[in-house]
Image 1: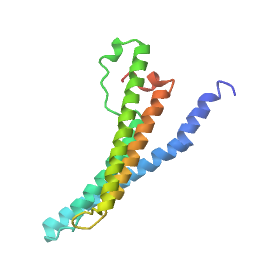
Image 2: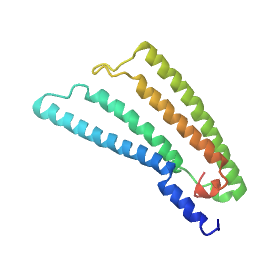
Image 3: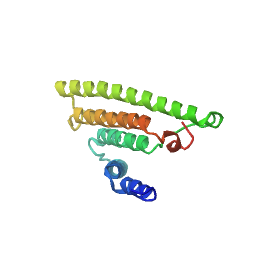
Amino acid sequence: MTNSARPFKTEARRRYGPQAVFDLLLGVSGAVVLFAMMLLTSTDVVLRYFFNAPLRGAFETTELMLVVLIFSGLPLVSRNDMHITTDFVDELLPWAVRRLLATAIHLLVGAVMLGVSWLVWQKAGSLARTGDITATLHIPISPFVYMMAVLILITGVIHLLKAMRRELAETTGGAI
C-alpha cells in the first residue's frame, strides 16, 4: 500500500468502522434520552401546574435517564479527547515530556476506571441480590448500575489503548 492511500484508509475507518458505529450508537442513545427527559419534564410541569396532576414517577424516571445520559457520554468524551484540559504548562514542556506525561495520565485514568468499574459491578451485584427497586415505579436498579459498570470499563479500556498509541501527543492537541 502506498503512503498516499494510507490516510484515506484511516479516514474511512474512522468514518465507517466499528468506532464510528460505537460513537453513533452512544451518541444517538444519549440524544434520545436527553429528548425524552425534556418531554417528560415539560409534560410533568404542565400537568402539575395547570391540571394539578403530576406524572407519577417522573422524578425517578428522570434520575434513571440521567444515569444513562451521563454514562453513555463518558466513553464518547474519552474516545474523542473532549475532556476539559488546561494547557498553560504544555507549551513549556518538550514534545517527549508531553508525550510521556500524556501516556502516564492515560495509564492512570485507565487503571482507576477499571478499578471503579469493578467496584460498581460489585455494587450492582449486591443491588441485584437484594432486589433494590425505585420507590414509586418499582423499577429494578441493578440493570442501570451494571450498565454504569460496563460503560466505565469501556472508558478505562479506551484510556489504556490511548496510552499505547504512538501518535498520542499529536492527538491531544497540545493539551494534556
